[in-house]
Image (cartoon, rainbow, N blue to C red):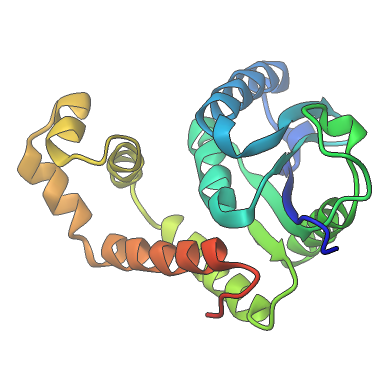
Length: 214
């Protein structure tokens, strides 16, 4: 019988010990994880937990990689401008799945840790490790997306974030107290359009894993 596959996500705050007000950031991190645990509850197998280790880290388990990149983007949006390095791994488990991430292990976590180590070496924000002939293309696409996203202004990132949440330009305009044409203008910036297209391609691939190809 084929074993079920899952998606582990492990990440840490980059150079957390060097950040000012580290204790304040840690408290904010705890609140942010509570929010994303609630937002992604339907996809979470093991709740995402915060740890104060050599660096301030978190890990958890999703039932599939389909929402993994969106999860990482959401946690980073909650924590901006705090920098993160994140590894995403997909594979089987060697233990029974459960809400307590400390009691779960297996291939998915091993791959996530390997991806995190490689992301640190490459100085890349997010890196995947999963069984796919398209893995190199996947990580190249994510690397380009992260670089382009880093060039957006704070206002552009805010509009994109709320558009993801509300999915309605008029609602975003009300939320940010700007005009709907101002929202439309931001969303039509070529870089943002290309990022939206790239994230759609990425999402289609992840939803189709392990059979999808880029």
